[in-house]
Image (tube, rainbow, N blue to C red; front, side, top):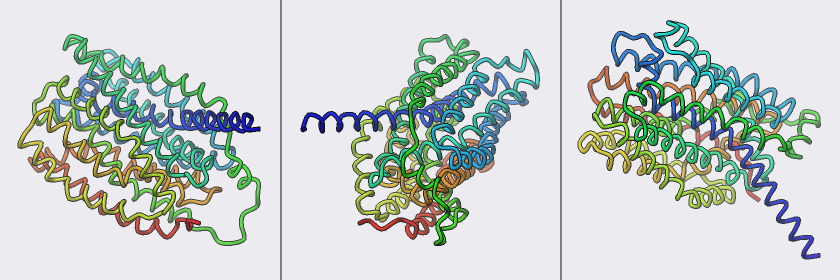
Length: 428
């Protein structure tokens, strides 16, 4: 009897591991591609964009990076609604297939010297395809994790953030490895193609992991049942709350994506040195995963958000001073310690965030609600963050001005969390 129970426990644990891996790998692939785009922004600008000077080309590259985020809400509406009607797993397969296509397009796209304006238009098309797919990826995969984990929603969904850290380590390691292994000319002319090709090759692995995933029984029951007689919380209101909740986390995440470019253009640091500091950052961040999961588990038990708000206040206060320190003592040590500092003080916010956002919505509308809310938040506060930071520095002449952006995003997130608390179910 005990042997059978032990076997069943091991089988359940194995299924849970496969579910988390299959759900989070799409988020990892997304983050890998975005980090690679940010790390190789100057190379992409020189290869594909026709600006008159380096700053203009860089703004065009980051503008294309940001414009693709405008496709996210469209994809979120389409694929999020599809996920609520047809299921989370089939939506996840469609999304990762489109993401793989987009990565391959960037890896293989000829430069503007070969095909002229078709080159930047092709990159834009690839980013729009990717943005559309990602609009439905996060919501459907996070909903699947939450619905398979009653009572452990934030703990399960926290693996989404961990998958981003894994992807960040891989992306920064790939970029750093290419910067040290290739001659400077080769790195600048075609090193990014190898990096994007690696992302494209990860797509079939994601499809293989997702092939055997099943929708949660709770979701299937909710989909089959008629709409409840009682009035559910407004989905539109939940979307606005979710978009605000992700503001500071998105600004912080894409600030790290922007840092190597900042180090090269403002601090005149070598690419290999800057990327080496970011690689070390992700190594240390992954060592914090047990703490991250423990914080998320604690939130599942209490549903208290006081530490989340305190974390946001800390990030708001630290934004501008952090850039003051980086400019006063430019170098790889500061480039490593400052984002690590933000990672540590942001843990009480980031650890339970994904599950918290998902619980804002009822099961029957979680796919579209979480997808659209996250897509709008990412588009507004993340996609254009590198562009805004570059523009702020150029317009003000103050290389510390990106810290102001972090502070404003923190205020929005604190307000959104205040509204989100009213939607959480009571802990029994």
